Image 1 (cartoon, chains in turn purple, brown):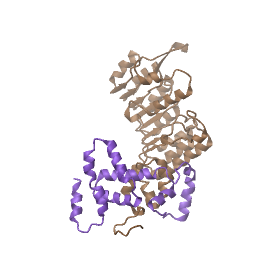
Image 2 (spheres, helix red, strand yellow):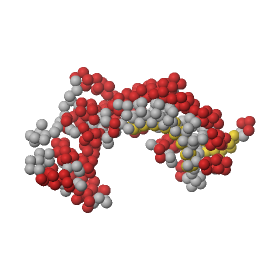
Image 3 (tube, rainbow over the protein chains, first blue to last red):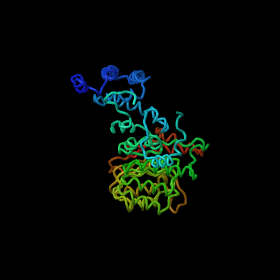
Image 4 (cartoon, each protein chain N blue to C red):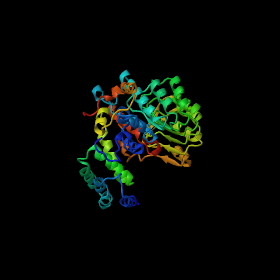
Length: 126
Length: 306
């Protein structure tokens, strides 16, 4: 079940996949889910609280932890959060947010941008 | 990067499956205009089939700067060009995996749009056309439907019956089985329809005006018909020698009797039906447009709703 991986985690001596900080956030989630699963609104609020101040780097670790622990609900939630954060944003904003760099060939990137220039109107302010 | 953890993973090499999981909830406009341009691994994830089963252009919000309120269809050059670009970008990323394509109800299409779409969606099974498709020529229609051999289902709105489209489907789409029409349904259209798609299984005429004689004809001639939706229809009986006609709501007993062999025959309760009550009887164009668009989008047959 959900807790097989957690047991394995505690058994492993040198586990680099999940730092302690993340574990304390992710592991209590199933219990919380069970307690208030009937009430979606409450769960939403709890989740909003949880991620109010989380930085993109933290989000990366949370996602990786949830993935490693095979915790589907948490993974779904974190992925949704990321999706909400990048909705209707420009390419530059998304790159900055995640600390990403473009690895396209220079000519390729220019070509793609030209193709999509019309669609940059109407995106949110950075 | 920010930390020196040995399992440090930047978003550049984030797990492909996780990227797909994130992107699958995004609107296609976000995908084509920003997410797919971030870096090559993200672009790769943007091509995953999970993102492209359905391309729904009806989620596009129309440019409010135009000052054009609905229901006026935007058929100017500018919106046409933008539509072409959207189709190309989205369908290129989709790698031919789109199986359901929904055009925007209010944006008109021409040959270029349909051919561009057909060239990039060879696996299309379901097509939902916009209100104004009348710029399509016979040649454009033939060229497009030739690419859609696996097409099974079509929704066609508008008052003019789609003769040429059904001819093309008859020629090229041998698996075709479901049709939703919003045009005027009379004998002139019903007769060739039974010849073009003799194996039709599902037919929805919800909200349309139908000729009594046409209904009798299709019930006699569509031997494989299983589901017929006549909710919210208006019946028309034309007198002999076309001297006049009557409009009425109740479906005639002969039609009801012939429909008894069908697996599903859907009608609404005229007196209490909300949709029928809402049907505008005045000339207000905006009312009609809203009613028609609802008819286009919703359907009592779940496979024909989108």
